[in-house]
Image (tube, rainbow, N blue to C red; front, side, top):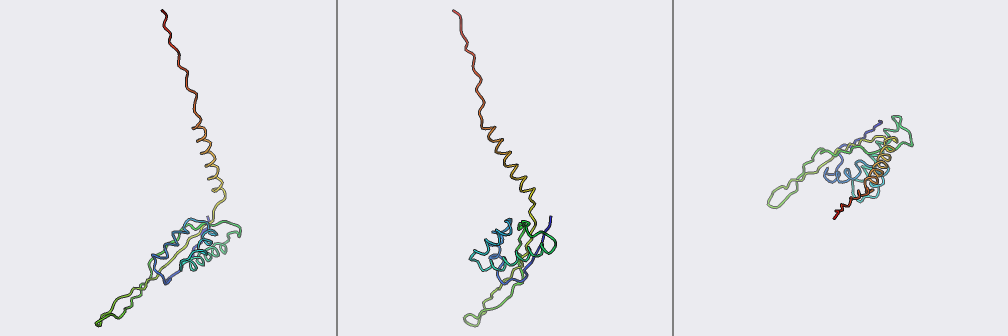
Length: 149
């Protein structure tokens, strides 16, 4: 299986906000993930879209075909450097401000067509089994007991 990775270091947004989009596209087909990010209203959508496209380019440069289908296998968002600043407050005090950054890593793998066909075949077999199970068997006729008088 051909895989490609791309990473984004010290992205200036908190990991908690970036994880919302990462969890949205994790496990999806690459084209579908790019479309979801393109129409998302979140600020992190544009950098993540570029990151997925970069991972796709890395896989294609490694020798994958242009018509192959790819899936976002994993997208991790880790904590980066925290910049510490301070805001002046009343009576000479200082209020701490933490400016968080994120490290984002994307792993993309080629989807295999036989696996997709095998899943479709498995679903067909399951539906046939369910249909067979739902067909009721004819009840066995009870013998009438007659008494001679």
